Image 1 (cartoon, rainbow, N blue to C red):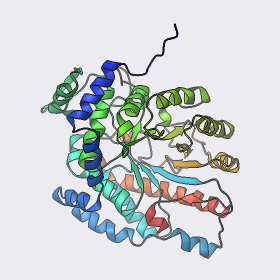
Image 2: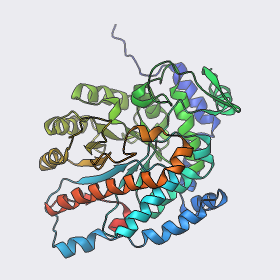
Image 3: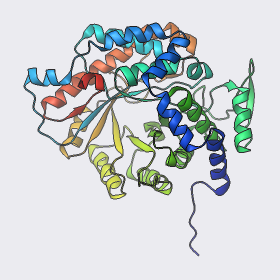
Image 4: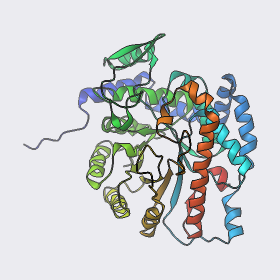
Length: 411
């Protein structure tokens, strides 16, 4: 007898359903999420937490950003190609660093902002409930008109109540250790970052529930709806969890190592197990690994199309920071080859290629105190990534390709 093996068993699905019910169910989560994404809501929250001045200043700065249409007219640029490039820059590390980057970009006055902004930061209680993330979202999404993606690192120390509530909701006991001052953290066994789950490390046992709990609380509090997903188990859990919450979407990290078509087919099997009623998946985007050729990238697109997932986006790193891979890595020309094949591509900038201080993966995992102290340096890193992205995007436009930027740049 042929047996069909599912990615989640009935017990695991029940635990996820119970977690969702604990927060009021899919309909309530969706409604609160929509309300929490409004600028008035976020600005009010930011003001309550002492971030109002940052937003007031950012409002003025963002009004001065240049517009794409004016540039195209001045340069006599015409769009002649169908395949599209979407701009993306990583490293928007919290409110102060983002604000510093906005200051630099406004002073420059010539740069277009990326459509997607990625942040790799632990969703600590202070960041989620202290106004930092809400303020960052207000600047990136509401003022700059970008799509903001954040991470959820399962090893983040949290108040003991978070783990107690998780047990109360799901009946699943998560092994934790005392982190001091009423906080607890997952017991991490394998090597990885201080927070555990880079490349899926330490998303073991039932840790996917910690991930889902983290993103749900974050969505409800801040309106954040786009989350980085680094693990096979969290992908399966996210697809099942998000199948009836249309506002929540996920980006699969390159660090999952989707380096070939075999791995892509594995992902497709997971996604198709838990499709939404309209046939779509909560997975919005896959970051294809750095080692692929343009030919393989296009093949991945064709495989997704044949699987009925044509609306899903594919991203490629164009430039990477020095501790992520080869120091001479540059995928710009490869990206052009992809576009020539009629295939859309997200141009992602993890770096500007100049090895600046704090332009490293390690900088994603510094403490909140150090992040506050080094916000100027990190804001400078963000600025230079945007400059590199802007330079390449303008080159693509001059080739005749349509390029998608943040709303503030597109007018």
